[in-house]
Amino acid sequence: MDKKNLFDLVILGGGPAGTTAALYGVRAGLSVAVIENKALGGEIVSTDRLDNFPAFPDGITGFEFGMLLEKQMDNLQVPVHYTQIEKVELKETIKKITTSAGLFEGRAVLFATGTEPNLLGVKGELELRGRGVSYCATCDAAFFRDKEIAVVGGGNAALEEAIFLDRFASKIYLIHRRDQFRGVKGLQDKVLSMPGIEVLWNTTVSKIEGEQKVDRLVIVQDGQERELDVEGVFIYAGRRPNTEFLEKGIIETNESGYIITSEKMETSLPGVYAAGDIRRKFLRQVITAAADGAIAATAAAQYIFA
Image 1 (tube, rainbow, N blue to C red):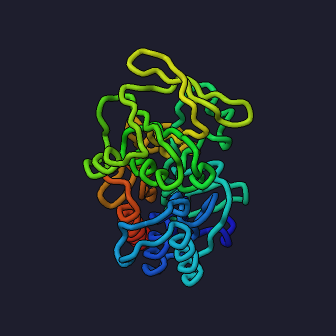
Image 2 (tube, rainbow, N blue to C red):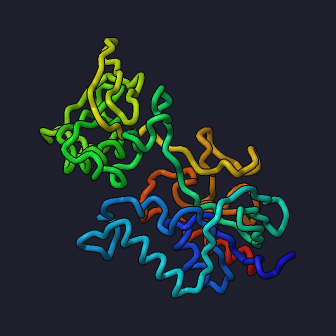
């Protein structure tokens, strides 16, 4: 066992859940390491503004929020390893995490790796990804200034991103397969009041077309197929948990793959915890992710020092 890479708590994921867990873990006297494959802050880094987190009365950009998390981890002297998780071994007392940067071992492990967007699964989506097909308005909105675009979906994410994109696009077609939205009423009312957004009810996308970039969508509305000339399409077809490195069945999950935990963030394996969007929960927000992380680290400290 390489004691240099043995920690009390190894945290997989550096978003709000993982970084809060690191904070609480260090304060509880644990040696902590964070493994992150992108940037501290997770998806929040690519969010235009965070307006619903306490102590920021004027809001804060996602990038600024991520930078503050990075500064806090530096101040706590928490080692952050930017690497890709390849395999995890969780059944023994010492848990092993194999990454592209080497092996890490922990007396406890916290999964806080978040989620990824689901694909629409139509022809042209993968071929034109990054060339008009996007899953993040705040990342790519500026590329579509004064252009006509489409947003696909009817939940909170689709409505929020359509509202944001209205600052840039000349026209937005909001494509939803049902005859009513699933998002909260406040967002629905806002979208329906915006003249730059046209809602296409009972509509699905059957194909995304273009040579070097998106030129049009083929849509089916009320059973009739037609073309829709747009230069971009933002897809919000739900999300899936980032658990691809987990051996199937090793941890209890629900039918969608989200990890099932106790109120102390304990999974079905001793010494293994989950926090944030990756776990089965009612509300997936920055503030609930942070709360999960605090609870998980506190529970891990109790487990380690028992």
